Image 1 (cartoon, rainbow, N blue to C red):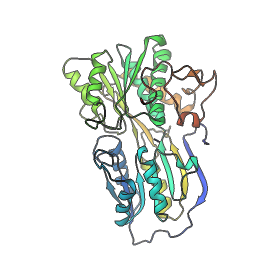
Image 2 (cartoon, rainbow, N blue to C red):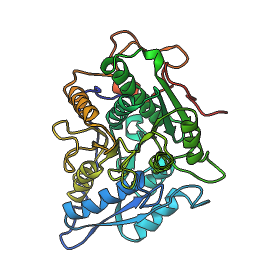
Image 3 (tube, rainbow, N blue to C red):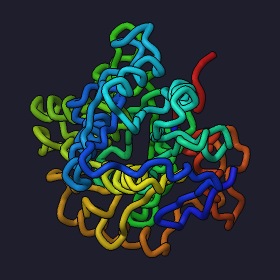
Image 4 (cartoon, one colour):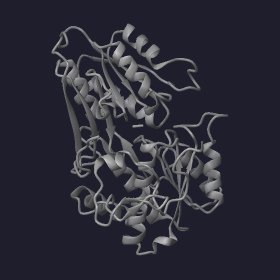
Length: 398
């Protein structure tokens, strides 16, 4: 979803192409700058798409003169037969000067639309066409370094589990989703071995994929049924990697039935709401810093085609103005584990702990990182498999 790249330890990685749009036209003072948003899910999904929607609303406040319009539920189930270029045409006809596509599966369509509309700016979230050299000069890529947030999620899960069995509720399988599952596992393994001082072999980490970013009845596996199987099999903490909140919803139901279980939702800062008694915390995206920089440059006539992979502001990871990745500690996380997590976060930020350091092997036994080798961004971005120690599929069945 979501070649040359800079070092993993950088907080913000920006590769800027040599192309700059001709100053063309800076925004007229009395004319609104309309930007359009294509959302893969509902705008109020309590997850991925809502995080984008609320980030765009914040841009209207931070950048005077901007106005957001949007189309949600842009997926094969809700808009069968409708193409991304068709939806872009609709947004442009309503005055959009910039269009944001918020899903990896929009990659081909948004590239086509960018070529068809050379005078419109485009942001593809999670893509890498700028890196591969496929992007026209009016298209940029944006993504958050959620790998850090997932490490925190895995760390909290491992400190909390009573059974030593952690489940990972995954969406579809691609490089992005593999690297986020891997990051969760590495965070869990670190807490298990380094903090709890337990043998690595006693930790079970199972990844189960549903087949899309959220449930599509009759098409994907039902995430509530996947959660049920996790809990019935003794997995007492589940980390979610899907766009919607089934993990915490199901965990709360099980808690009300007397089971001691927990969950870590994903994407959206408010994802613990309504399930506080089982929510260990949520790693979330804050799209405001990236949106503000890219939309602001377009408004000023200073646009450059670039790839941005933005990380936490380690001075304050929950600062809404500066940090693209945050972790909101959940009410169900014990005080002792909160303190341990805070130390872990500080160690990640200082570079004292780097979990992408070898030796690490892929699931099939081939080396991912040799002993002492530190992963380059390219290796992490293009994660080829899950790692040894993880259970579950590394690729979709053919």
